Length: 329
Ligand code: ADP
Ligand code: MG
Image (cartoon, rainbow, N blue to C red; front, side):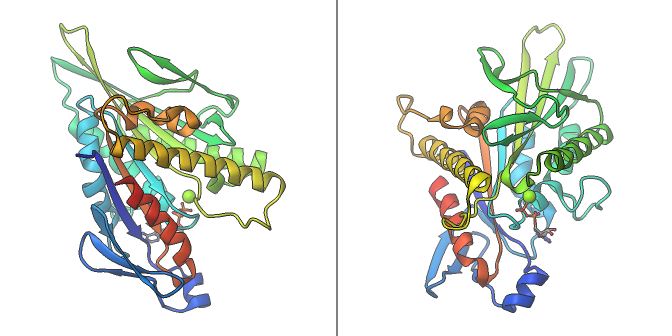
């Protein structure tokens, strides 16, 4: 059985899509798992995922189905990863952050603030057990890893330790003692990301943003620590860059994004189709897959949310996003 859950999410039509292309959508949901996409040639393509979230689905539904099981496991020492994939504007950041990380209201808040609440709801500190929760936030741009809690650390290296697994050498780890503090740290990281963008004249849609929560459980009288890592990934936009139009940095960016997204696809594929231990998993093909190595492999759980626009004008990008998801099953 594969331990990857693949879901699709269609956001509502944007006002621009409505204005330019009318109300026509390329997607029809059949039931909670099955939906049909009408491609550019007007052909129906049927998909069956673990769950499809149509435009009326709310943030709580996505969290409860896709994320909550991973939160429960992480506080018990099992690693997990939640990844949002899709073209720019498809709803990846909305799904992860919500309309804003602080004060966006109970209903609209995204996966991140819900994960924070979930972790604190599920840990049970008492005389026997102590918990240590840490948070790191990094961004991968052009295969370079930057610390979003300290922008001066702009070339973080990945190390592997026998005991702790994959480590980001020197990356800031914020100790988190309550949900309010965690949200404050997250909003600092997100604001830093915007500062970095302005400084370097880049766009957040061209980099991968990675949030790493580490939950360490220390039992009295027991030297061993149980550690669970929960990683959230807001991927760079998966859209194809016009072969003719892009040049210079835009072309280099597109190549790098392409390379890391296909590396991710290959790793997930090797994990789900793999036949036993002999199977080679190509984690080292990109920084992204290398960071995710111990949160994707082993007995960890993975959730992939394929975010799509429902507009006919984006049918071909939506199709390619859904094919990525279908391949991961
Ligand atoms: P991405 O991160 O994939 O580039 P965003 O998450 O920024 O895309 O979404 C693009 C726009 O669509 C934003 O204005 C966002 O608020 C809106 N949006 C995305 N998903 C939803 C949704 N499920 N419900 C309402 N608005 C959404
Ligand atoms: Mg985004």
